[in-house]
Length: 369
Image (cartoon, rainbow, N blue to C red):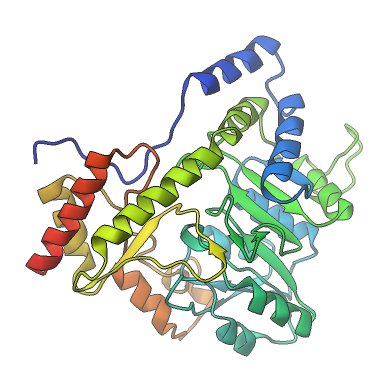
């Protein structure tokens, strides 16, 4: 293949981000400071209807500290999907609680509310839906379940900046929500996470936990961590916040173009968007009915189109998390792990790139690859 590879993901860092970093470096205030405080306020206003947010050094740290602040610990159970990145289950286990893995619904890969209800026990503390690939989980049903059983919701919104359901943004349904700012997300701060909280008490608890348990220096109130975000990272995040709406619109346009070109292909199932949902397409994830891995290899080797498989090994079969799920059977999770592949959808794609991707998938579908 002579044409350059179309990458599966491409972080966008421009001159404005570089100028922002230089400004922080010149200021001499490099650790957590005014840039972080401004970023927290701007993020909350932009994405979660003004909910107060706490910046941390990774999305995983946000999930972990959010649960600790909400009182999750040994003896508790938190219901999570197995079809997601390991950080979801890891964050529960790190509190000393037990991650309880349940199956997904096949259309949008989110927690299946019926499976969630069957998994509830007297030890269940909360439900952690993942808004996977940028599509909101079935929050109306999950919220009703939480109220019915007096449980809390902890949102994993790592991939879903700007997604919503019935006009309500992700990040506003739970006790807290975690957003990731990793380089490959829809927008980045270089590395980091943001915890959107539903109360001042939770905000204070997360802030204590991220900063060695202290609000006043050398007066540590609880056992805490060093999970602070730097002003360097916050400065990048603030610039990207001004670009995210345009990038999201481009992702959605790219996804619409791909879906129009891939519709009706034998053995290929394009992603769907549920009624009332706004999908922000962190990933454009299709299903390949036969030989997904061969399809992905041919896509790259024969057509120069990169792709990603998220996630080939479900959490409940990972050596690290399998002890929490002995003998567990999750058929929809296993099917998704066999079939999914994510095609490029990022904002830097050109019309020529999109045409190449569509032509490649059409060719492989006809060839039965």
